[in-house]
Image (tube, rainbow, N blue to C red):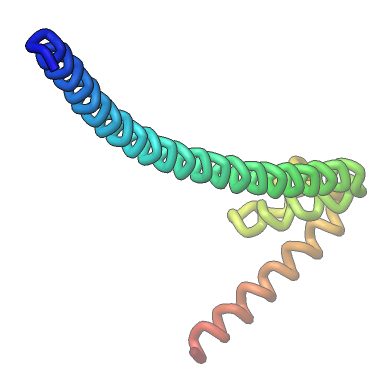
Length: 137
C-alpha cells in the first residue's frame, strides 16, 4: 500500500471514529431527553388524574346541592300554600315567647281575642311547668 493509501485509510478511519463518537454522544443525549420527557409525562398524567378526580368530586357535590335546593324550594312552596291561620298561630306563639300580651297578639297576628287569651293561658301554664321542671332538675 502506498503512503497516500495509508493516509486515506487513516483519514477515513478517523472520520468513522469521529462519527461513531458523535453518534454515541447524540444517542446518550437522546436517551437523557427521553427519560426527562417520560418523567414529565408521568407528572402531567398524575396532575390530570388529580384534576379529573377533583372535577368529579365537585360535580357530585353540585348535584347534591342542587338536590337539596330543589327540596328546599318544594318546602318553600308548601309553606306558601299552607293555611295562613296556622302561620298566624305560629307567629303568635313566637310573640308570646318574646313577652307579648293578648292585645299585641290580636293586633299583630290577626287572630281573635278568645284565641289570643287561650294562647296566653297555655303559655303561662307551659312556663309554670317549665319552672317546676327546672327547679326539680
